[in-house]
Amino acid sequence: MRNKKTQCTDLLRGALRILTFATFMGAQTLSGQSIWEGGDVENGQSLFDENCGSCHKVTNEVLAAPGLAGIKDRWSSSDEILVQWIQNPQGAAATGDAYVKSLVERYVGTYGWMSAQAVSADDVRDIMAYVQNPPDVAADVATAGNGCVNIDEVPVSETKDGSTLWFLTLLVLFLVIALSASGVNRSLTNTLREGQGQEPLEDLGYLARLKGWAWNNMVFVSVLGLFVVAYAVVQGYSALMGVGVYEGYLPEQPVKFIHSVHVCENEVDCKYCHHSAYESKHAGIPSTNVCMNCHKAVKKGKRYGEVEIGKIYAAIGFDPESGTYLDGDGNNGYAAPQTSFGGEPIKWNKVHNLPDHVYFSHQQHVVVGGLQCQNCHGDVETWSAGRIASVDHINTLVDKYPGLIQLSKPTLTMGWCIECHNKASIDLASSEYYEEMHNRMKDDVRGNEELRRILEDDKITVKELGGWECSKCHY
Image (cartoon, rainbow, N blue to C red; front, side, top):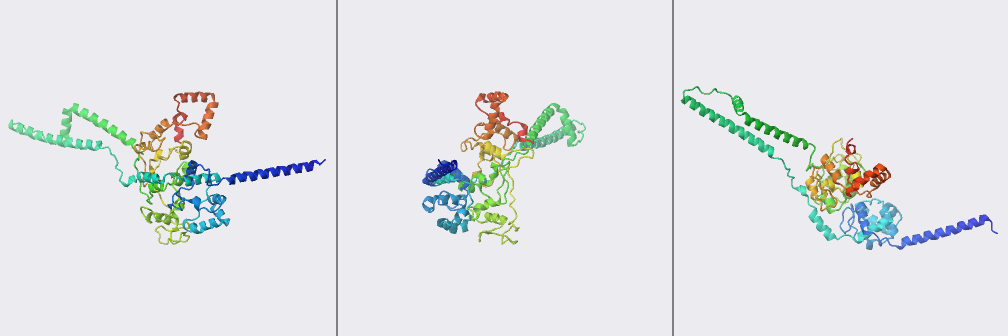
């Protein structure tokens, strides 16, 4: 009989052969499906918008990098090299692949190295499915042409309450008429007194005559005084309620950035530039490095040519002629003085600014709540510069953006937030956060009773889950 050591060795060898065969068969199965087949177009579109859309278009048009139309016919290397080229471009170039080498020689000098993308092979398959089956480009262009309207090219007409002005005008007019009538009446009275041989009235000043008239007409003066006091209280209250309300606020920016060109025409996602909205309290102002991801190649704008893009180059210290960053002390002809990193940072003027005692988290609203940017900021992709959208403007977007909530209070006010929390419904299965809340309420007796009470109207609002608690928004 064979000893136990020999038997164990044979068993291990057999298991190794099986494992090797299974691995080989699995590899054959993976490699048997082409990267160009079997992808999910819908998921591919989402992945493309998130990872590729800021630089590439699905047409032949150049954005910040060559268009991807016909890439299946152009790509002459293996599927594995394509995946590696997207995941790690420089690593793919290091393999010495002839086709990748030709791409580097043709494009890197003009557009720079493509950023490595954190996508899997399956993600790449979905992206390629979308690239090969893009939406109707003609329809998109028509939509862009109708929707990409820079509505703030026309000066914003601020609606002002003219009642105060009219009231003051009428008051002054009334006083003028009253004083004139008083003078005429005094002259006529003195004429009559002289005809009757009486002494003329004492020559009093306007203030003394006004006091005498008020005393003689006490009822009328009392009613008028009550009206004036009530009007002053109403106007004062309205003025106080307008403190901190800046609907339509449109500050001038150091660089004339056109949202409609970037978002609507070039389809750059809002959160590509304001990326910290996913993970931070603030949506963030994009750094100049983010601008350079595209503008290292795009050196001339549609509206302002090289002027505005030149400000970006001056801020970061980039020479568009040579395509290199400056590392000296000279500004090489640019307006901004150069430092070791380039010029002075661009000082953007903040548009939305809540009071210091208010806590608002973009991450909680975007990631957990699933809100669209337009819920609070309006149809920014149709504007040039960013501004505070009015609640009336946001309400007009209900048909364009499903799920948007119609509100009545001025934007960025406490009443606006409370009204939204009272109307916004929640799906307890929409995120891990709400699932955890749901599980805790189910597992607790008092919580279970509260859950049944909340679900009586078949709807759960933010308010019912504590969205009206003071400490949610105030420190």
